[in-house]
Length: 275
Image 1 (cartoon, rainbow, N blue to C red):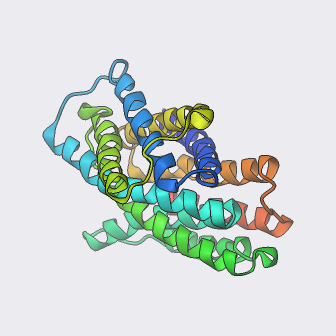
Image 2: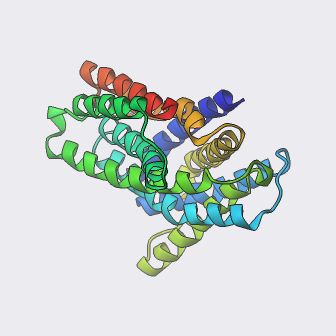
């Protein structure tokens, strides 16, 4: 069950991120993310009808806390992929996202197994290869920066919602989505940024919102039925999905060494999860 949920997360988030970057090249990244979050919140709410979920204040609080950063994580990720390359930004985001829960465990008294250390080394080696993209010039390093910032926000968010108990079902993911929506909608209103994508782009917004919303629900369910480490193993493939789609449909530069580096990154993240 945990593996199936992790695989669904990888494909749902990978495809959703592709649509997010697509929209961020056509509208403000805030606009794309706010649309995703609202639709994702309603999509996660539908899961309440099929997943047994008790309203537990502690877990709802974890979901809301995760929502404070996930909106910024998505905005940074989509903007980064729009101005740089998915092959650079997405793998960096994935590695940092995986490292944050590990760092949290270590800081709260957990140990740092040898496999985790090996996974970190393998991931960093893969990133060194993946982020080497001469044709991007300075945009490659800018992409690394966006990936680092996005991954940090994602890692914090997933660490929070990963604490939810199995009895609470998907309430944490519902509150994560709606909290993030509320935060970004207020910022967008103050700054005069459109809060929803225009009608010609609404189809992409709906698809991306449904996929990312249900993907987070699958992550929460997996973490509840196994562990944060177990779900991370199968959930680590999402950057590969995004990168391949961007290379096929958006002609993002993707060299053979970047494919090799991407595979190395995924392997490193899996080792971190197993450790």
